[in-house]
Amino acid sequence: MRRKLGRNDRCWCGSGLKYKRCHMHRETQEPVSIWQATKEHKKAFSTKDCLAPASMKIDCSKIFVKAHTVPRSSLQHIACNGHVYSFIPSLENIIKYKGRLQPELIGISRASTFNGFCSVHDSKIFSKIENQPFQGSQEQCFLLAYRALAREIYTKKALFSSSDIRRQADRGKPLERQLAIQYMNALIDTGASAGLRDNEFYKKIYDNVLLSEDFNNVRAFIIELDSAPPVMCSAGIFPEQDFAGNQLQNIVDLNMTPHLLNFASFYSGDHGLVVFTWLPESDPTCRPFIDSLRALSSDRMTDALIRFFFEFSENLHICPRWWESLADDKKNTLIDRLASSADPILARNPGCIAEDGFRFDNWPISNLKPVGF
Ligand SMILES: [Zn+2]
Ligand SMILES: [Zn+2]
Image (cartoon, rainbow, N blue to C red; front, top):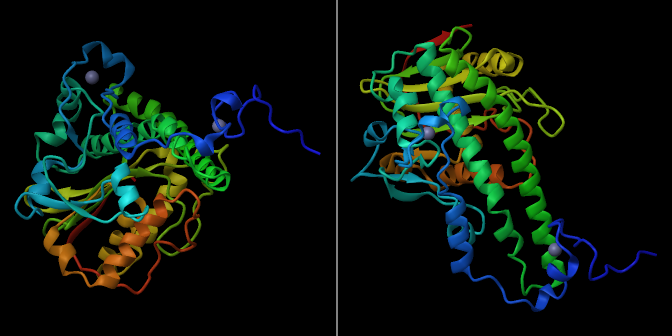
């Protein structure tokens, strides 16, 4: 028979605290107010933390300008009255929409921003993509990827530091709810810590490339479009499957470092762009992934990209006219993709980005350009 948990034993929830200081009598504890929880959550996601390589940190500024992961000038091309639709994973929204986030209109000065670089390093590191036209050089492709990777690290650190407040969410609730909430928290924390560890592994490699200024090994696949894509994004992910539904790597094994693929979609000033970037370490997954995209007929490529963007990134910014023109079943299937990818319990469906019969759009493609491979 199992012994009952004593007052001085470590609590069952994994907090590391003694039971008496944690879950003992939790059902009668004062619940955390939404106001307090929201404040803590916001604080975690607005921490100022410059992610420049360690050897550059000596020049860090105390000033942080919220850095755009999709350039503001790009967002302007798809905005209506200065607004785009974005998904904001704030605590209020997660509660309001019961975890199934809905797009909300936000001003482009706020869209896609994060506090991941101080003002000195934001302008120094990214000047070749912020102040020069995008010409698809290996350096420019790399910088897009570097920023996407930094954002992933920033977001996972924030998720991690909101762990305490998430662990308090079961105060005043019966034991059954406490178990469910703490189980969910454990999954979120395990996922965030494995993701952070893997992203930090790549950050060291990317830092070395940045500092060496040798971009010869950078791989990219550039899709040039006649006009601005109505969905703009920037993210770094570990692709599990290709566009034909084939398994590429097993990311469930937390002892392995999965291969990293970064992507961004934006507007260059005279044409639209979707850019995938990776380094040679990730060839075994990224090459077949891109091959499966290139194998699609050009009239099915846009929908494949849209499925992919919504499946893998919540850092999405959408042209209001485009979104509002979609029928409800199309909006719902895209929102479902986003919700299922944010749920730590649900595994991704097999073939999650393979053809699903939905037709969204057909962006005229002017060029497909492999770079460095
Ligand atoms: Zn506890
Ligand atoms: Zn800095």
